[in-house]
Amino acid sequence: MWAWEAFCRPEAGTLDWTRLFPSEKLTLGADDMLGVGCGSKRAKMDHENFEFFIICTPGFEDISASELARWYPSLGCKVERGGLTVMAPLATGFQLNRVLKTPTRILLRLVSFGCRDFPKLFKKISGFAWEDWLDDRSRVSFHATSSGSRLKIKTRIEETCWEARVARLRKRGRPHARFEGPKADVYVRLTDDVCHLSLDTSGEILHKRGVRVLSAEAPVRETTAAALLTWMQDLAKQEGLSNDAVELVDAMCGSGTFLIEARGLAEEIKSRRFAFEDFKVIVSPCENQIVNLSGGFSRLIGFDRDAKAFSAAEQNLREVPNVELHHADFFTAVALPDHTCRWVVANPPYDERLSIEGGLKAFYEKLLTEAVRVARPQLAGFLFPESAHPENLRLPKGWRKLALKKFSNGGIAVSAVVYSCRPKAE
Image (cartoon, rainbow, N blue to C red; front, side, top):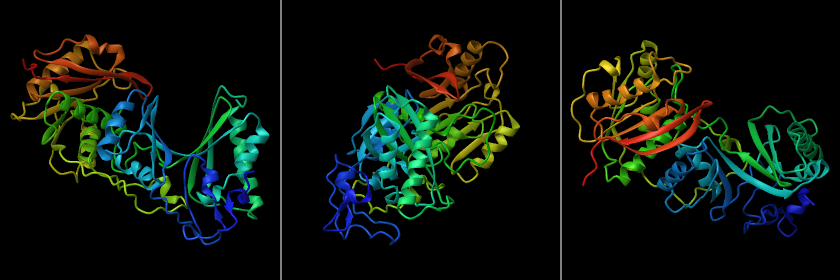
């Protein structure tokens, strides 16, 4: 039975979380939580682990795993298609939203149960103690997916879950609750007749950092930019190159996304709210503390010939230190002074939303050539559409492809390619 009473210890008069999360060994007594009607319930879960799923762009799972290991060296993960599964204390799982830059969303697994019909789905959802996590006034949206299960109709699954939550409120004496509180998203995934309920801890999609004010045409997403930069750092380490005091050059910076992300890779996000901040559960600071990341980018340089894009970059980067912006065409720009450790990145036009004259192949090969003339980099990373067959581009002398990843960027099939720009040491 999934009524409130089924999760209570009679001797303590508090929720029995060991029944709610049978895989966990939670020990909560009367002193661990405030009683019903006393506002937010405080749970001391410092040593208890919950299951989080870190959603990332398919193809970038290993990059997100690497980023996770940088911030939390002792926190393991299971790499899956489309994300990572992590067992962590609540405080740690919530904090992932602030420190990781490559994921798109982070979900908290609430409960899983077998389910083959709608009456059972209704019973389970109406029996779940939503009030332990969310305010009764929360504007809850259910998002359903189904694979290999008898329950297939997405809209009916979502409607059943909504009706079940209303029934839960009615049972608790809140039949007229006004849904004017914080927004909350619950993901209902049915796989092989097993229902998994997950609560979104992020809120707005994570590429929205709360930093970039103005946007240029066809911008790269922040999570994609962060993934390319993180990947380049990993590849540089493999090549024996330094990640410290790197001067980063964006050949076609647009509104400055690559430069903004480069500055923020080693910092926590403090410029926006996250969904978990509106949860009722309050946790103590976790013992699994994040590390202080060292190294990074010492100077940021951007080029763009478009006046609107350049103006946007100026506004977005006005408070970022050590930035140098050039309102110039990279193809005709004056060469930069030599620097011992310089990388080049670019998200050039794909000839889709932004058109280019001539063939894509010739345009991209010229971009690589001009990168040598203007920047003379150690490492270079680019986002090319697959239609240009980037694996067949003619490379400047001494360049070699280190790695290539295929993914979808705004619905366009794209390859991220990283090159070593110096001859390989014998």
